[in-house]
Each structure stands twice: as structure tokens, then as C-alpha cells.
Picture (tube, rainbow, N blue to C red):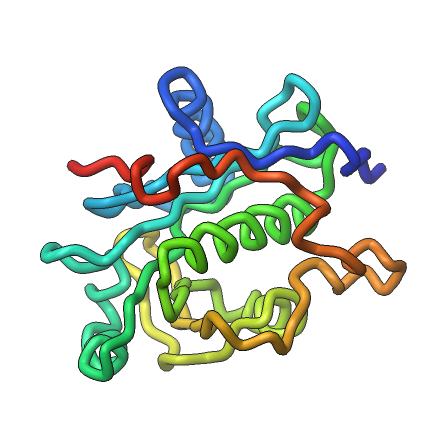
Length: 208
């Protein structure tokens, strides 16, 4: 059964929270048979908390001289954005606990909350494009519910050992409310549904 979302909170992970996020990724990737991909060189890890329980995580990778993870498969497409002065970033390492696990919050709501928080962060940091590599079977959901568009053809992602499609969400285009997929008013005020402890935005970036 779908758990409550009223207490779902998205926070920038640090210290023990980063270790919790790593554990969620390790468990869920192993369950799906994916290889764990390394975090990008400059990144923010967000963790979703339902009450006191960690229920999901997503990582935002910022562009740097080392590039993005998605450059491995889609360098030409991403360079085209960079050449026009675009500031790109990417979503990686999304994982949620089993719906029957801690917190019991339904996975699509956690993803929508995480994307919503990341979009707000990216707008604060004046990013222009958010990229994500998704399994082809998830393309329709990312398009309908999260406002992404297909930006690159299907290719095999060696990092996760799975097929992928590059998708992009252009920021500053107010044509989609993240979270509106439920059709029951849940997404009526998406920016207020899931607070994110943003603090100073880029100051939280970890460089490796």
C-alpha cells in the first residue's frame, strides 16, 4: 500500500546520510542486476526521508573539466549544448527502498520529489539543462510525468550494464509541473510539496 507523502523531505546528504544513500543504491542496484555507477566528479547527493526513515536517493552531477558520466555515451549531444553556452548537469544513481520497506512511500512520488528538488537547486545555480540516462522502458514516464524529452538514441550504458536513452529537461521553460502525474491534485503546488534543505546550493558540491 502506498505510504504517506506529507512527511516526505528531501535533504542534501552529508556524513552519515551519504552512507545511508550509498547503502540504498547498493541494495537496489544489486536487486535489479545493475552495476553500481560511480558518482560524477562534482556532485550533490540528495536523500529522501519519510519521518526518520531514509527511503530514496538521487545524485546531481555538475559539469566540470572531467565532464559528466553521460559523456561516455552521448558526448556529441552534450557538447552541442555546451557549444551554445548551455550549463549542463545530470541525474544519476536514483534508487528507492522497496515499497514494502522502510517508510512505505511509493517510488514514483519519491522520484518526483527528488527531481523537483533538483530542478529548484539547478535553477538557483543557473543551470540550463538537466540530463538523465534512463532505461528505454521508462522513457514514457520521464516524458509525461517529469517534463523530460528524448535527447539521444538508445545505447548500452556500460556503467550500469543496461540499455539507456539520454533525456533532457530544459530549465526556465514553465511547461510542466513535476508531480502532476497522479491526476488527483497532488501536483497542484509542486514547489511546496517537498521541501529541500538547499542552503547555499553549489557550496554543498563535493569534489573528487
